[in-house]
Image 1 (tube, rainbow over the protein chains, first blue to last red):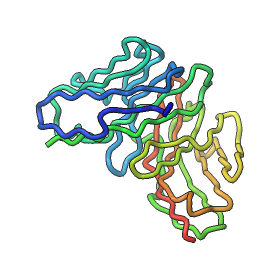
Image 2 (spheres, rainbow over the protein chains, first blue to last red):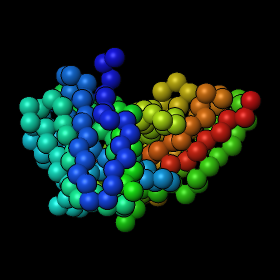
Image 3 (cartoon, chains in turn orange, brown):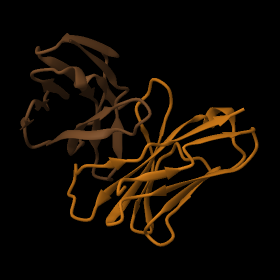
Image 4 (cartoon, each protein chain N blue to C red):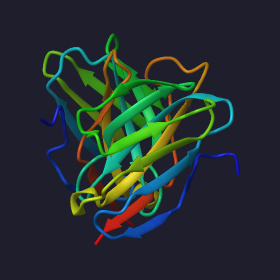
Length: 116
Length: 111
């Protein structure tokens, strides 16, 4: 399978705990996006990497959220001191090097986080 | 603030007829617009896009129309098929490489 993969697919955690999600993009894709999606809403942009550089961050990304892409391949999204409002689907997407503006994003299946 | 809006949460269409999904946006600086389709338990999949310098783009059964003066775009699916039943999101891209998504329209194509 050469698509975008995300792990874990589901995570249940207690409020106050830290969680980390992983995204493996399509191997030759240099651009990587993280989104959050809650029920009845579309994906909300969180952050964007080009190779290992984090180029954009949404105001939605509070200080409790941090994302990395250390070698320009896989990425991790960590949420510290989780709150119930963090419960959502976290989606990762990637775009290839040759893709111009408006190019196709390939989405992973998402990680569903439930904070109890 | 919701910069991309899909005001119809659901739409039902008979198989073989046209499906028209609508989307409005507020930011005149968006460069590209895209439509995605999402099945349950899967991530969105790209359908079709259009540059802000064009007013129409067609790909098989899917056509996207852009009306910049009205800040409105629409997706036409002709003919509609039961396999088209899914949630459709429109999205817009700004110069900062941020994508803004609408809230989605759930399309049901009735056999």
